Amino acid sequence: MHIRLAGAAFAAVSCLGLRSMGAQEPPARLPAVVVNAAPNKPGARKMAGVVRDTVGFPIDGVDITIASSHRRAVTSGNGEFRFEDISPGTYEVRARKLGYAPQVRTIVVDSAGGAGAFAMMSIPIPLLPVVSSAARGGLSGVVGDTSFRPLPGAQVRVVGHSDATTTDSTGAFYIPVRPGNYTVSISEPGYDFKVIGVIVPPDSGRRVTAYLTPQSHPPSVREAHNLEDFATRMSWRTVQNSKVFTRAELEAREIEWVTDAVQMGWGWVGGADPRGGNDLDHDCVAVKNGGPAYISLESLMVEEIETIEVYKAMPSINLTRLPAGQGARIVNNRRVSVPQIQPSNSHEAAVQNWGKRCALVYVWLR
Image (cartoon, rainbow, N blue to C red; front, side, top):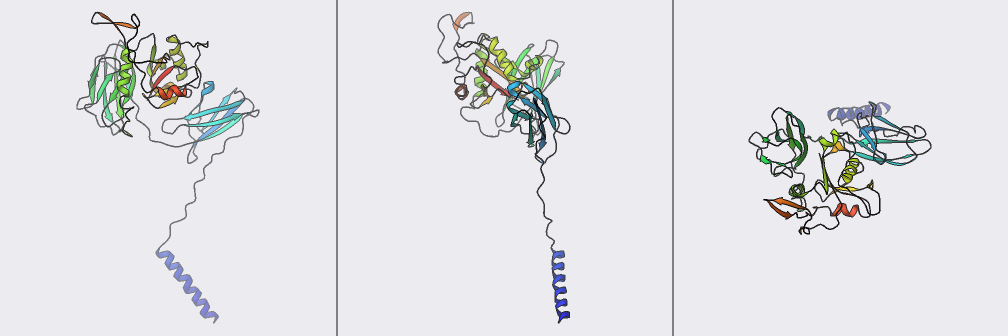
């Protein structure tokens, strides 16, 4: 009896073993262990933190910014960052690096300091335009798609000027512009347009290499004419009511924060507020890429934009002509009034800025 039971048990075990050998099940996969704990608080009037990816590996070279106090740091090889001399309070801290989705964390600094941790998600890297020196004067370049194939027939336009051309069969173009500071738009049906700021020096030219990405969505009715509206504003703007900066110009001035550029432009056009004071509020928004979307100016840095338009806040602007003697120009040897152009797609931004001291600002992102 005992022998028969042992034999049966042995047979059952053998069958199970053979069955498992014939069709092995995949090994169980344990979930990844992600370390997302913040470091210990560093002490009074200090802020520290760490930046990792979504798997838990530290990321170096991440820009860490505190927009409200214009502070900036860069993470070390182990993903850590640190700020000194930080007053107690609540801060919005932003982490940003090319190839990762930006993140904002709220960090509270108390008597023991403040600490925080970021977990950044990897995203496809966009192909940014490249501007380089060229021996030939003027503006030249090549336009392609994100697969590095040339785009023939793409329209290249110097915004606010009559200079325009289309790319040839190799995607190349040339515009004989004079030395100066320009904003260039590049467009092709089925692709998102590009806006690029360029400074053409007197002793050489500039060559632009631009990559257009396929349209992520068909443009809405309000988005479809953003480049035309931009060109119209540039054609009719005056130095008395507006200031336009390109990224190249602001980098040459060593300006890092877009709010500083906007404040400079506001002072340039003589902006003032009837309540007194010339400083703009820090939490204003701007029209993004022609609108109707808007974006906060507080955390934007110059390296993220291509062009900024700053206008005096004008409450009711329409296409009627100005009273006689105001804003006149000479056209074909005749003195004519300049029509004021409605700032397109600025309504949503104006609603967000209601009751604040803000300029009318358009930003065109890279």
